[in-house]
Image (tube, rainbow, N blue to C red; front, side, top):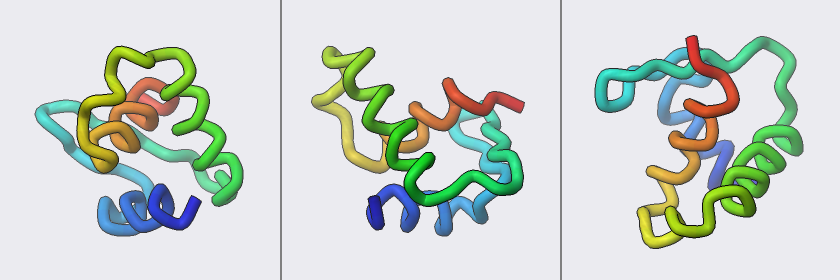
Length: 67
């Protein structure tokens, strides 16, 4: 969970431009919810697990919270 939070903190939390895409995290998302989003993404996309951890966190949030 803390790794996920660290990536999101690095991205400034609410909006991050990543390879031309943005994800916008709504106010009030908890650390537990953030971890759940990443876990769900990993469960739904097992073929992506060879990518870096930071990539996977961002991909999960891009899917969950596109701007």
